[in-house]
Amino acid sequence: MRINISKTKIKDPFVLKVQELSGQNLLACYQCGKCSAGCPAISQMDILPNQIIRFAQLGFKNELIRSKSIWICESCMTCNTRCPKGINIAEVIEAIRQILLRQRQDHVQIEKLTNEEKEDVPVIALVSSFRKFTS
Ligand code: SF4
Ligand code: SF4
Image 1 (cartoon, rainbow, N blue to C red):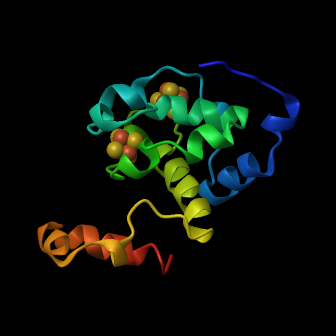
Image 2 (image 1 turned 60 degrees about the vertical axis):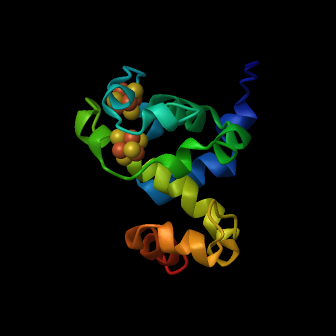
């Protein structure tokens, strides 16, 4: 992947919004990787949790909003407990999801699921999907 770093990107309103919604200081991360090493969902992710933080630090908005990982994260908080800098990574990921959901961009379109698919989906997943509309 070709990486272009710029001052404009780092000061992008998207970065500031992620920090505001998550309440986290993104610049505290020093990329130790402990969050990713403990993540149970990592095999399904296209960007690792530590990379999500790094991309957010650098204002890589497009890479983040196109990422599968922000929807794969199951908010188990394991990463939060492992971070030596006290960063709540799960909240950062949730903040990115919230920005997209407020723009009505969701990963799962409940209304497009067939009845057969709805029967197979765990109830908690449906409840979770509906809760996104009220948060
Ligand atoms: S554990 Fe914390 S400091 Fe280490 S890479 Fe993850 S977010 Fe950064
Ligand atoms: S909260 Fe998300 S990113 Fe963190 S360990 Fe759990 S699944 Fe992985």
